[in-house]
Length: 269
Image (cartoon, rainbow, N blue to C red; front, side):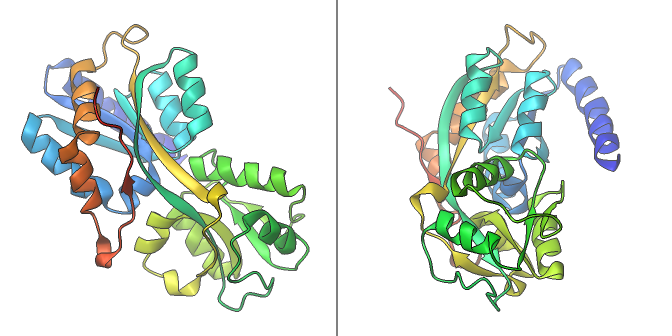
């Protein structure tokens, strides 16, 4: 209920500014880009260059795409490739481009009661986890992370039964906190985990599986569907974030000396 109230207030504030002709760009994006501090690092440079103010709504990728589908934002930056491709194929978005990537991690209490530490086969680890007594906290919010987690469990062919499998319906940082409190495992993106203040409570037990690759894409809302969007500013952000300048600034984002996002934009043709 609180989330819906905040969203309604945000839209009430953002819409009049856009209608008044102010240079405002509405961006929906996944929580990882915001929680990690990446947007706070990137966007001031874009705003200074273009004079456009970016208003950010950080939610799960599913919700971010829904906002874009409804024309409530001008551009979306998410990490749910299959959903992104459907979004474009159905005519809701245009000019999708690769932006960056990182990876997913399986994190658990350091005690490692499922005995999965050090592995690089995520599916084998999930099967072992399912047969143990360890709890697993799912985001359960249709975010990019949640969509990938569900795909992994399907590949594993098994999942912990309730009550060991809990669907939180929360953002990544909150789920990490919940997993730490309940001594449970969870799937997380590397950026949110690396910048989570209590990461000592959960250890990285499985990483490095190629299936844990986590790409991000940026998509402009289709102006043919929503003529009132700020198409010009949306394309400005897409061009900038995939330019050599934007990609270099992204690569330079290194909290505590650790690179969390890796540029992947293709050179302009």
